[in-house]
Image (cartoon, rainbow, N blue to C red; front, side, top):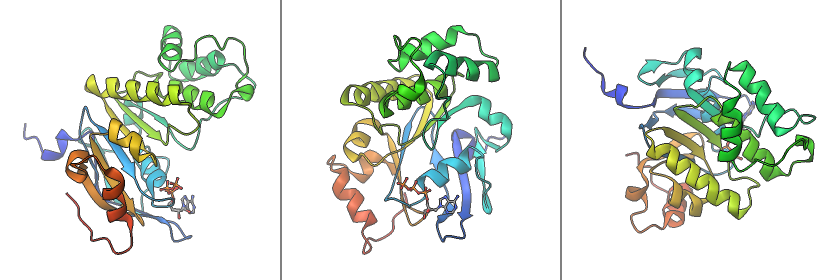
Length: 244
Ligand SMILES: Nc1ncnc2c1ncn2[C@@H]1O[C@H](COP(=O)(O)OP(=O)(O)OP(=O)(O)O)[C@@H](O)[C@H]1O
């Protein structure tokens, strides 16, 4: 069988475009996300990061272009292989963490044993009967991550997962994401925390005004580790475009 080059990407998009009446959106994205890598999507507020992640997950329909996942055109079935946390956690506030996970496990027809495992992974064991409406922002973030991990996905898509986490949570999340990738799985994560991205990411895509200004290895963008300087060089209006 002839294997096209795009088969080697977990996610590849061709000319992916979504324009909102508001003027925002994304334009002509050719994303390339490789297996076993942590791909960080960066960019100023409103650059199109969440829009991009939603397009990958079928939460938005593109105006133009296409999404390939695992080398095949996007279809709903790919969602069984992906876990995601977008736009904050969709949780039942009157239920405990365990009950929330039970609802999702039932929807996904998963064995209940997974629940204890993911609660451990995100550091939420011991919350007992505590209702989610009493959870802090960080605890909700941890639970959203648990929901994303529940189906034992091959791809994790996380929109600003560090939001609200305490330093212990940030470090634990970093370890979890790195070990996920070390196991050959793939993570796409949007973030504003450049210091964290330096420790987390293998590859980065920098979006400015809905367009990819850079895509490639983090080490190539910031060989000296100064991602902040490289980032501002790309995102300031006078910056020259460059796509690897
Ligand atoms: N459903 C929508 N309807 C209209 N405009 C939208 C919609 N969703 C996003 N936009 C606009 O598209 C642009 C990109 O938004 P998006 O949320 O993707 O940016 P972002 O990079 O994730 O920003 P942030 O860093 O603030 O989270 C913004 O101008 C936003 O106002």
